[in-house]
Image (cartoon, rainbow, N blue to C red; front, top):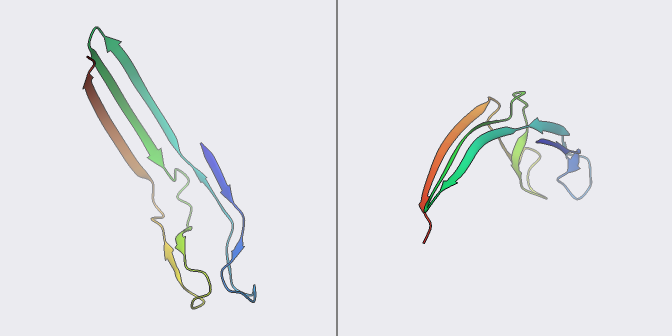
Length: 85
């Protein structure tokens, strides 16, 4: 999944802006239901291109009032098991 955010001013005068950025995320998995049991196995990665971006921006605060997000690739995996009545 690709995501693009345009530059955004975070002060009312519009002089201070957060830079535009694009993120690339991916997730792939396997899901199967056998009788009364369900299994979902997946693996993925967020920020594949290691883009530097702001995770949270505080509007009308100091010129550097933002929280930077991790600028490295974040890998994840998961397994969901369920019993279906």
